[in-house]
Image 1 (cartoon, each protein chain N blue to C red):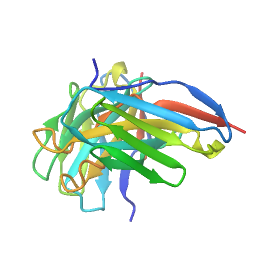
Image 2 (cartoon, chains in turn brown, red; image 1 turned 180 degrees about the horizontal axis):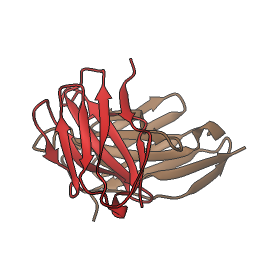
Image 3 (cartoon, each protein chain N blue to C red; image 1 turned 180 degrees about the vertical axis):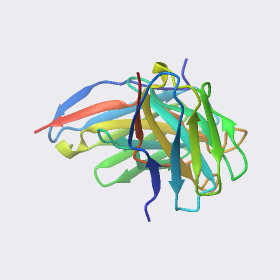
Image 4 (cartoon, each protein chain N blue to C red; image 1 turned 90 degrees about the vertical axis):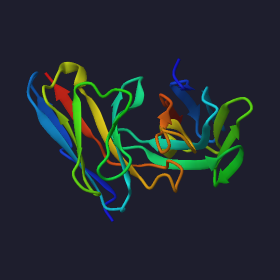
Length: 114
Length: 114
């Protein structure tokens, strides 16, 4: 079992829809949680970054972390065709021999159609 | 600032040939990473360098070697390329542990081994 599980999709929604992307994980040492966005034939770029549990909002994007359930989510409100990309969750411990290493999900491919 | 740069962007090799992928960052980051990305597999860590002068194996190191030439540069070498090494290779850097693992990615190198 991978340490980070993410449904690869693909996910296809109409413009304006609310999109929910999710990841589960097994390592309780993870404290940093990130979402990366990757456009086709480009490198991943950081979209959202949270530490420990709770919510973080940035414009149309909201990241949620539920450490008790080992579950993280990314919500996209009023989705746009420009949001079409692959979204990768990533997480990292805050201590130990693997400090600084990121553990990635497989990525969810999202298409928002006009 | 160019961020993270990678050369070459594309490469085609024959089985058994060798090559070196170059990566440089201008953000004065301590840590650098090499990943490969295959369809449906997400990002898998090949090698990383937590600081200048140190390198460590990641999840899939077999068939690869790395050199941390200085703080800016981190190269990945394929000594005898195999078709299984056909992939997209990404270099990344981070200022860990201060930023808790947030990583910045280069644009990638698309490698095909025939």
